[in-house]
Image (tube, rainbow, N blue to C red; front, side, top):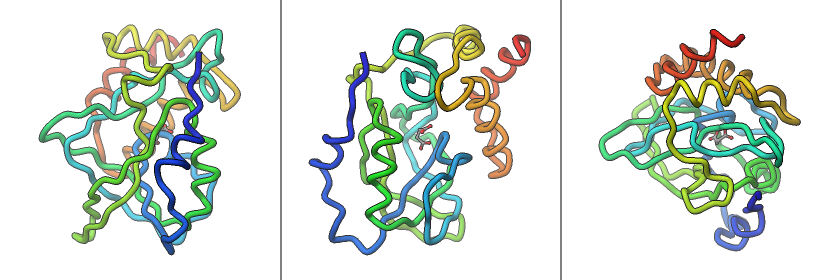
Length: 187
Ligand code: SIN
């Protein structure tokens, strides 16, 4: 039931001519930094919102019982703040594998906290991918998260570490807050 996007990402975007590329992280890429980077700084993208609408068969769930993790959903006017990392192109070998369960990488404009701007890559699981779960009430999402875990750990840990990472960036995300509010009753 999963769709491995590793090859699609490689074929769509040849990054070998770049000396370095900015990667924008809005979910686990904020708090789980298992790759080398040249520099990092907080950044914001416009027109996107975080949503726990993507199924996870490989990290926070299993093929039989997928968890729920983040993707971005187009929302005109919304700002999404996360962490940007400047990485060498080879790092995408690792990142494409890590984000293989339905995520495609897209270039998007980044506005950094220091006022500068650049293009960067962001991994988005679009609604046409096989692992997409879609919208649900936040209380239902919390119950789903509370009952899921996979090779990378519990689904609740994903949400709680994200919440801490966002707080360190000074970000309060209403969708994440609502799910956390419901989730704590199960912990
Ligand atoms: C991201 O963090 O930017 C992508 C989604 C995830 O891996 O949680």
